[in-house]
Length: 139
Image 1 (cartoon, rainbow, N blue to C red):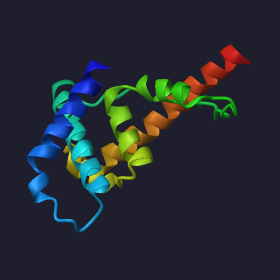
Image 2: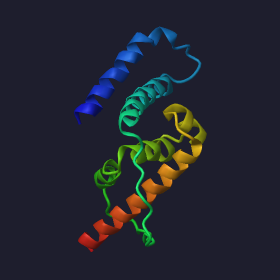
Image 3: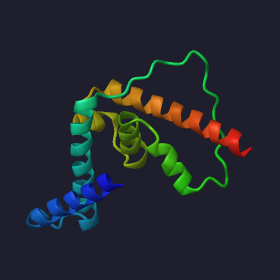
Image 4: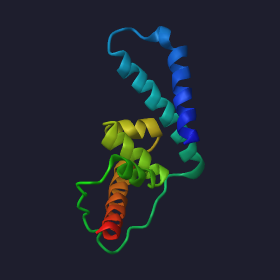
């Protein structure tokens, strides 16, 4: 949680330092969002460079597709996403939540587009597996 607060603060510092560069050609919200996302990407890139992207060996068994609960809260979903290794989580968030393409992700993180796609597939499989485990506990 401390990292998130630090990143938020760092992002706002960058916003205020660069406010004079806002050209009123788009929304201020979008401009701020872009700065915040790039601040987080810089942080994650530094962290990834220290630890490399996590590569798990493929499991031989097929991962069952998980059926989402109708009562799965946003908090539960966020916990599942947060449980992903940082490389998987970063690519998943950038692709599924932020809407970046694999080419954009590869440029921002300094990885190959194929690595981005691979990390996304593995993140989805891990989420499905964890959701299936959660369903077994609840159901």
